[in-house]
Image (cartoon, rainbow, N blue to C red):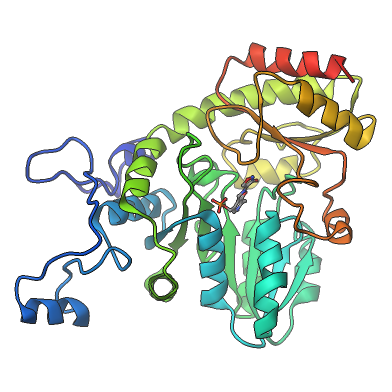
Length: 393
Ligand code: LCS
């Protein structure tokens, strides 16, 4: 079925999917590492590209390709590459667009390991990086050098929820021939489409909203055109960060309910955010849906919804945050986000522990910051849980 002209919800269900010769209702799992050739000539033709037949699962697999095609349609991209984890997607993007002596500019408040891997691994190959507050466009302009090859944006950023204007940042980068990669994990294509806003690649930790059920780890890169796609595919195939067919099958299953899950979670997140905003023990709160959020207008411009990620600080700093985390019962104290269950965590000592204290503070990741991922439980239960924990402070 040609799904290109269908609506987003229909694409969630049908895009990329195929039915086998038995009429399977869903895309089957091709749990095989390799594929037999019909003849020696056929094998040679598959390798030369003359025949599009499958060769080996690291290079390509029908179940994995079905997911890649679905994600590409959801992001309005050319094609996608699925990977073993979100970090495999991050490092594959870095490997593809950086080289010896290259410089990259990145949002300062990115997921901790997305920053730490540059400092711990890529710098030893001569890569330089500037981590800056990309919500201020002049910071991007000022950071550009003759050797800048990559602008890496995370918006909303983990865990500060800071937004970067994807359209204007991409315009600046493209004037200098710089590739733009946007980590779209916090929004998913249901709420934000980086490629439509001018980026070259949309990146995902599929572990989060897209799979949505906290039962797999996965990642993806979706390219805006064939040239960018071919470069990414080649890096993934050589580096070997491919997804597994069973993992792909679970993501295909999980993503079908993406819009239903996000609709519920963000409706609840708005109520939770209003509750926290009015609570006397809350010092500050960041949620793009609140009028008090300083980039509320940008959120309305580039996102179609405000998502379900909230950051807040409790009066009393880190110790007060610890009391909340130790006294919630419905919310699970765990890293990750974007699943059907509500999660709470402390970025400074958990997800961003690998980033130095000075760099964390410069990026706005303070000791008192608590991150809350609103799930799809009854919102009254989520608020009652927070209310009980806040009473303990
Ligand atoms: N990008 C973002 C924005 C993320 O939040 C994460 C993981 C990744 C990339 C990496 O994806 P993974 O390899 O884990 O699939 N974020 C996590 C977090 O905030 N808590 O635990 C993992």
